[in-house]
Structure formats: C-alpha cells, structure tokens
Image 1: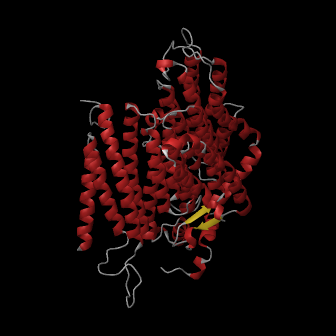
Image 2 (image 1 turned 90 degrees about the vertical axis):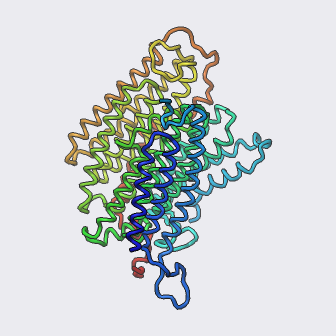
Image 3 (image 1 turned 180 degrees about the vertical axis):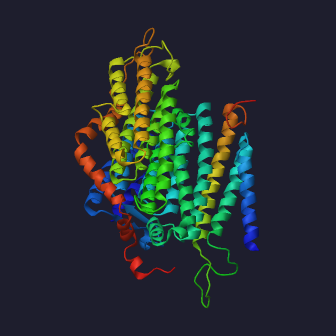
Length: 109
Length: 506
C-alpha cells in the first residue's frame, strides 16, 4: 500500500513538474523544476526500499535496519537543489529586470 | 599519497582565502588567483608522472575503505584530463589578467571553484560524488557566464541554468535506479556487480546507465541536446568561454569512464546497441555543427559550433569501442580543447579592434589594427581546427579515421568527418576573409594590441605544433591509457583491493 501511494506521489509530482517546466514564463518553469526536484528526492529516498519503523543506525537488540545511505544522498540532493532554486529565482528576477518581461526567451509577445 | 587531493584542495583553499580578504586590501592580493591556477600545472605534471609509474593511485577520503567511503582514483586518463584543464585554465586566467576589469575578485573566486569542480569530477571514483562535483562546476559556471552583465548574457544564462537543472534531476533519477538495483554507487563496485551478473539481471542497471549517458550527453552537447551551447559560449566573456572549452569534455570523460568500466570495450551484449546509438548521434552532431558553423553570422557563435563539432568527432571515435580508436579520440580531444580555447581568446582580441560591429561577420567592416599578427594567429588556429597538415588537427583526424577502419560504420564515419572538416574549412575561410580582407575604411583602434594580451592565445596555440613534434611520446601515453581503460578488472581490483576477496555483505 505504502509503495503504491509513494509511486503515485512521485508520478504526479514529476508530471506536474514536467508540464510546468514546458511553460514559456520563468515563474512556472522555476516552480516546475522545484516540483520535479521533490519528485526526484522522493524517488532517491525510495531507492533504499520503504521499510517503516526500523532504525538507520546500529542499536542494541535490533535485527533489521533501514539503509541509511539514500537518506544521506537525499539530504545532499535537497541542499544542492535548494541552492540551485535560490539561484535560478534570482536569475529569473534579473532576467525580468534586464529583458523587461518574464518570457524565457526574453521576448515580449 | 595525499597529493592526489591537491587539485581539489588547492582551488578550494585559494578561493576561500580570496573571499576573506577585505575589499580595500584586495588590490594587494590580486596575485592569489593566478598563482593558484599556475600551480595546477606542476601538480598535474607530477600526477601524470605518478600515473605513468604506478598505474592506479587510490585515495580513500577519510580512510573509509572503498565500497563504503568515497575514493579518489588517479589513473592515466584522469591525470591527462587534469593536465589539459590546468594548461587551459592557466591561459584563460592570464588572458583575464591582461584585461583588468572591475569584477576581478568575483571572477577569480568563481574561477577557482570551477577548477575545483572540474578537477574533482576527473578524480572521483564515486558516482554520487561525481554529481556533487558536477554541481560545483555548474554553479561556478553560472556565475562566470554572467560576468560582464547585459541582457544577452542573462538570457543565455537563464537557458543554460534551466537546462542544467533539468539535467541534474535526471542525474539523480539515474542514481536512484542504479542504487536501488546494484546497491552501490562506487564506480568500481558497480563495475564488479555488472561483471558478475547475467544479462537478464542487468536490465535496471543498464537503464540507469543509459539515463546517465543522456545526462552526460547534455553536458557535452551531443545532438539533440546541443542547442544551448553556441548561444551560451557566444555570450560568455573570452577567458570564460576558453575555460568552457573543457566543460563539454567533462561529459565526454564521464561517458568514457562509465562506458569502459561497466559495459567494457568488447564483450557484453549491450555494447553494440550503445555503440550504434553513440555513433549515429555523434555523426549527426558533426553534420549539424558543420552546417551551423557555415551559417553563423558572428564569429563567437561559429566558435561555439566548432566546439560542438569537436565533441561529435570525439564521440564518433569513442563509439568504435577499440583501444586504438579511444587513444585517437583522446589525442583529438587534447588538441581540440586547447586550440578551441586559443580561438576563443583570439576572437576576443579581433572583436575588440572592430568597434561597434564586434565579432559580426558582415561585409566591409572596419579593418583590425594588427592584421599581420592577428591574421597569422587566426590562420594557424583555423588550420589546426579544420584539420589541415602540418598541425595537430590533421594528425588527430587521421588517427581517428585509421582507427575507425575496422568498424562496420567506417564508410559513414569517414564521409561525415571529412565533409564536416570541409564545412569547417569553408566556414573559417569565409570568416577569415571577411575579417581581414573584406574591410572598409581606417582601423578604429589607435593602439596596437599588447603582447601580454596575445600571449595566452599563443601559448595555447603552441600546443598544436608541440603535439605534432612530440606525437610519439604522447601517442604511447595515450595507447597505454586506452589499454588501461580496456581492462576494467584492473581498475576494480585496485579500488576495491581485497574487499572482494573478503566477501562483502550482500
């Protein structure tokens, strides 16, 4: 059940992300990239299998563990994705300033 | 041993130091950046000597053993890439020093971070670490691309950034697929998993590797993902564009590394599919870039198409999947990277002397102030790029054509590469005659170009005759590099050590 919900969430997020990324205005495109990066982060997280309730660290009396590596990978990906989104946001504002409109090709229509 | 990490640590420390200097003392510390960049050259020479002596050098970061921790791996290929990067970066940095501008500190700091990302990508033996270094070099390149300001740069940067962010998402998806199935992101460990499994159990891993190849193709501007490159490179200031000449080669490096490690040069059943796919895309890239170069209305855009064409040529040769062809591809890659860098620097000098029309290839522009010097340099660069004797471009292409003889697609490769060279020749002759002969009026610039400004371009261009004169030692180095790449078992054994013998936990 959790797998189904999880994969639907990843699918819907990437669908919306790709749709928004193909828009012609910078703001929807940035939103689309953000949604896509959420989908990607979830997907990366899922690569360690979805096992609820087990510790990711060595503990006494525990037999089953969750793979901690995907969590570390997701953390790195979130940090990088966050920085990149901030940068692209500033760049989009600058493009609005420099080019006079928010079209991704910089032409008013 | 610890010296392997210096190409990453040196730029990091230099950049951090430069950021700490208070603004009013900055002029006294201007030398920090150039010195740090220059220092990369002796380090690269030393590392090449190490790679020649020892084969592989493996450096586990934090002393965590290989499949669990991140390793840096120095082999002949990574040492070679470090060397190209160091030489190109030194020339680009010198060119920037010769043109003092107000943004020097930003430029120098970003430049060092870019070098750190590039060197790290060449050294790392871990796929996720490769992703991190890619992001470092990309975010530095976004800043470098915007140097100088202006609407055209902003527009080019917006496209470049958005495309690369989409590419990064794809990179992470590929990584998730690989980790979910193979349970490792260490390149050597991944190669071990691939070599131990049967073809039926590899479907997900292969899908992940194909996705990775798409990402690398985007970075290296392979058709149909090449459209961003000419506009981006045309918008960047000259030293940045010259350094970007190696950015596409990072993608090529990554493809060579992953392809040889996981699929191997011969053997697995997937290899023919990848070879066919690569060669079709590569030759289409060469054709499209040739036509694009012929149709360019500005000199910088023309140079951008030449970069695309050179990457197509490299990939076409890699797709032959023979050690000999790999060695030829690497020879061509060295020469095309350095000479294209020289061309970008030269174009800037020429455009500078033409006033308002800049690098436009229109008829009857104003003549340049130093037609003899700049014309000769342009002519030599054009000869090297188009692949005419006696410069290195000719030998690079000759090696590729000879090595490709054994492949099924040899007639196609010969035809497309030769016609591509003809198109480049036509495009460059047209550009040269419009720049230097079809001129009208008096030179606009009173002062002749300074020697310090021409020197970096000459330095890079000098690589071309040197590569011809020392072709024998260079080729023997490259042949051994290709032999090393053709033997992934050696890499696996060196990186994982006896970890495989101990029987790692499943």
